[in-house]
Amino acid sequence: MFETDKEVLDWYEQQPRALSKEFVNSIRWDEVANYPISPEFVPVLYYMRDVESYTEVYYNELLRTPTGRNPFFRKFMDRWNVEEYEHARLINRFMNAAGIQTSKDWRNDAKAAIPRSYTVENQISSWIAKMFGRHFSGVHMVWGAINEMTTLQGYRRLWKLAGHPVLEQLLRAIAQEEAIHSNFYWQVARIRLEGSDFTRKLSRFMVGMFWTPVGQGPKPQKETDYVIATLFKGINGVQNFDKNVGQRMESLPGFAGFKVVTNRIAAISIEGYCKPRIITI
Ligand SMILES: [Fe+2]
Ligand SMILES: [Fe+2]
Image (cartoon, rainbow, N blue to C red; front, side, top):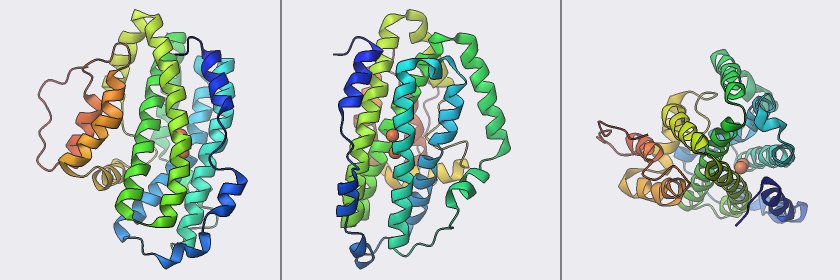
């Protein structure tokens, strides 16, 4: 069990990259087109590629906050930003190999599609973050842990549902890196939350009030909902999500019984699902 940010960073830096050059070269790119990919998963691939590339936007947002000025977290962020962009690039490469046309300048096109209102919201949230200073780092860490865990489970669901062997080979390696990111955020969140009652209360309140699934904001809500409904469809999908994300969240200090995240996924993925009248945050 880690006790300091430095211990968590040391652990992270010891983790080899799953997407080494050798591994990427070993992917059977020339066999991608031999297997079909169901059209329902094409918008999911676009979404995942773009959201991975938006890490740069989130990175720049974090730099303006006390979280980004923490030297250990900054070191993590620099490697994390590179890894996430590579995920985006490899998903795009897979799409092209599968015959899905993408624009040459897709990265800038994806960025240009972010609504201006989101950029303003970014600025506001970094002001709030500054106001609460170090306590807000707890919120960032919990938020990051949810995003990384959700992304990881999203990839697992996609390779299981799509049944494409080369996509599975790629996503398994991406998922290994997402698991490392998840653990980094989760461990730092745990340290922050254990250390302060105020951080626990602030984090639970902020995440409960403002959390939205990863990518929503830069992407329109209907696209986020489509991805969630496709990957976590029905009771089984939601139970899978709750087991791998919701319950892990609830094991963080101050988050016992926190159901906001799973309830949100259920509201999207289960037809006729009624939100509980009282949402405990
Ligand atoms: Fe990623
Ligand atoms: Fe990640």
